[in-house]
Image (cartoon, rainbow, N blue to C red; front, top):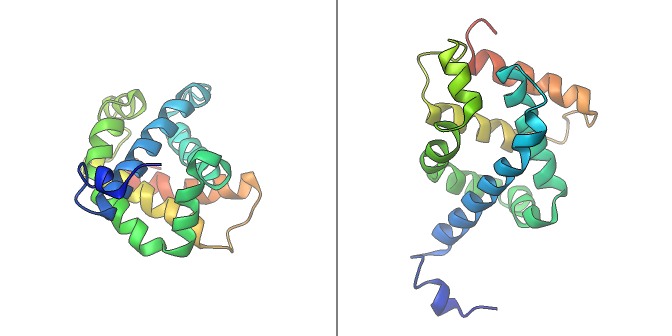
Length: 158
């Protein structure tokens, strides 16, 4: 354990602490998925599969159980905290991520959206998958849902 006074020496409030934890978990999750996603050549498929894997990992992974619980119990508050950290995560993950670099260089990503816009949309779609119980549970249906929601929003001619 750690004393509250020790924790708040580094963070002004609970939201900052939670945001830092969420950001760290997202970074670790992304690093762990890179190898699995490298099996797909098409960056569009890598994005779809990456979000699918991330949502499943948050739902089932023990290290991310807190996030899943918070998303179900207080989704909007957690969404607001996540969105506050989107710019940092976008800079760390999307701008340097080879998938997005290749997609941008190939002219696949819409020119009118930024990395931050993309990440905000990914967070929004991920949150909707947590909060909607009516999304079919089969992997094929979830992947189809993600393709419908992500590809036209991020990529040209999708």
